[in-house]
Amino acid sequence: MNCPKCIGKLNKVEIKFHEIADMPRQKGAMVTSLEIDQCFVCNGVWFDAGELEKYLEKKITIVDAPTIDFGLIDEFDKKISKCPRCEIDMVKKPAPIAKNITIDFCEKCHGVWLDSTEIDRIEVKNISFREKISLMLKSLFPAKSD
Image (cartoon, rainbow, N blue to C red; front, side, top):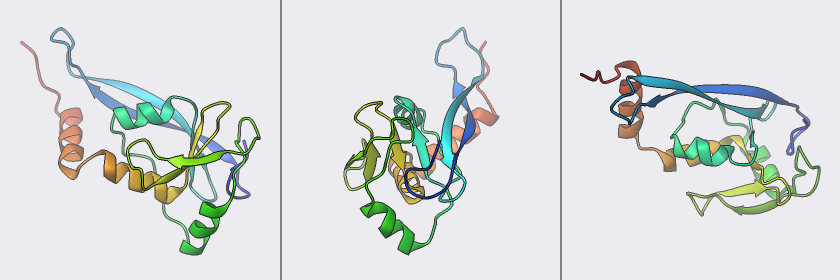
């Protein structure tokens, strides 16, 4: 798939994360994965329908999205992007958890594009530093059940 913002191509990235067992009979953490697409040039991220919600719900913070030049960020924000799946114009709308962050949304396939700085800002809004540490510790040292 082509990047909706630059000349790059989107590469599949599999994110593996630990889900802590909530049920008393389950033990430890279960490894789950989420597959997203990331541009190798601008580091933006494409979420297919439902993936952004899962990303936010599970409080995943491991997308490697290095920032890019500030001039390009302004240029990307102004650009009307084409959906990499449907190739139709996407609409700009507020992010689900941060109304001051604008995302690109495809009204046909319900995919979402986040520029590299947008994904970083959403992660900061979605999970506190204390929660990050807690989740990391729980995945490293799962609680033992009797």
